[in-house]
Every structure is written in C-alpha cells, then in structure tokens.
Length: 221
Image 1 (cartoon, rainbow, N blue to C red):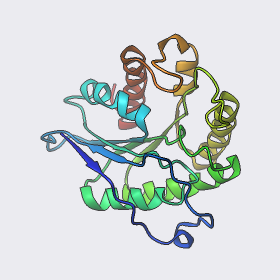
Image 2: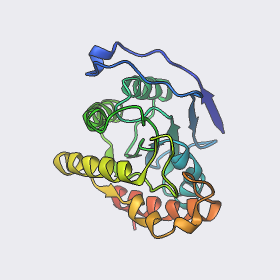
Image 3: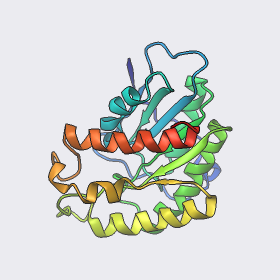
Image 4: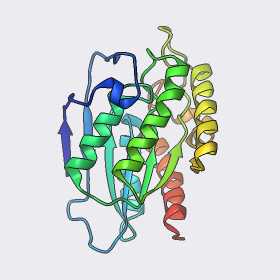
C-alpha cells in the first residue's frame, strides 16, 4: 500500500532554525508507504530518504518480513531545506506509529543550498526525528555517488564527498551509527540505471546492507 502526499504547509522557518527561504525544484513530491497489515508485536522501522531510498525500500521490507514492520517516508526536501523538519513533523503526526529504528538520508537533492546550509540543516533533521520517534535508534545512510557529474553544477561527486564528510562529523558527535551506502555503491558504478539512480540489482544490493544495519540496530541477527 502506498500513499502519495503533496503537503507544503509547515511551521515558520524561524521556528525550524532556518533563516533562508526554501529552494523548490520543478517537481515537488512526498511519498509514503507502509505494510498492508502491520504485525502487532513486531518492532517498527522507518526509512527516510528520497527516490534512491524509495527504490530499495521494497527489498528492505521483504528482507525484514517477520522481523519488523517497515515504513517509508520519501521527499526531495534535503538537509538544509527549511521545509524538511515540518514535513517530518506532519508525517509522524499523520502516522501515529512508535518507531524503534529510523534509517535516514536526504542527500541527493537540495543542490541549490550551500554545503554550509546542508551541514547546518542536519541538526534540524535529527531533532525532528528525535521528536517524532522519541525512542528510536537513528542510523544515517551516506549519500551514494553519481555516475557523471551534473553539467549544471548540481550533483557532483566532489559535492557528495564534502556533504558526506560533514554528515559523518555530525553523526560522530551525535553518536549516530552510519550505513555507508556511498562506499558500497562506489564499487558498483556499473549498476547505475542513470547518472543518479541504480538498477534493480543495485537497489537490491543497497537493501541487503540497509537491512543488515537495521537488524543490528534492533539487536537482531
């Protein structure tokens, strides 16, 4: 079951610790998915990300079937986007689920924001996750490489490396474990379906690592 949402309302930017206006993309969207019938008694896991996370979500849910209920919230609002904390707030309020693990990344969008804005936005994203999933273990997924750098100054491996470095420093300070999806897919650039996304085989490979990381966070083998 999936639900496509298109909400854009959020609390004032000042309340979110952001002082710059949002930089919108030509197409804006949010996307959620959940188990058709969540199993009572199983832990609840949330994947937060963008279209790359959305691609490997079904395989993660299948891998963890019988061990956890797996949910998805995907959006192109990246760290640094003042709308993201509000979107997360609305998602948690809508779902009303107590999550045990949140596996998160939003790094393949928001190229109109500087790396400084990206790094500063991580604090707001983490705070929104802690507020909405008060008991959850957080796991950060590093941003995957692109096959070719954008000719428009958007996604490039140099910028991705810088953002991953900034994120890694933040996660270290916050004691949040990292699922290094970047290192995994850097060795499998042949599995790209385009410059940014991965083939079904590539997404399946990402899912195996994500599920293993989540199992560890849940204390499962």
